[in-house]
Amino acid sequence: MNTNKYKTVKVGIMSLDEFKKRTIAIAKGEYKPTKDEPKVWFRTLKSLAQVLSEENQELLKLITATHPKSIKELEAVTGRKANNLLRTLRMMESYGFVKLKVGKSNKGKAPLIPEVIYHSIKIEVNWN
Image (cartoon, rainbow, N blue to C red):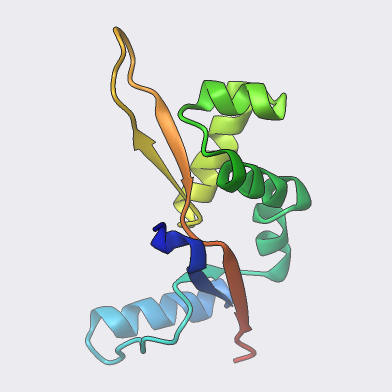
């Protein structure tokens, strides 16, 4: 059974200054994040909306539904060029929404296999 099927990530919105203060406090041992705090942070709701645009949400749904074994296979399903897909997937990977696994090599370069890590998000906005 795929345990990822039910994973939810908590996403936080926090200004860069507040995020820096928080990171320094954590590094100094002055603050320890709790289990229920966001795991992924964005500076603005707008930046979150750009990463999880309708097109990117559809891409995540498609990956979940079709389980492509390579970017090339995903290219065929989406009609998007491989370099465009890879750029989008790498950006989403940097936020922890997607993982690009290296597949088994078949007489050449090993394929990258996209995998969706979270299937839902909860948003927390920090007004401080």
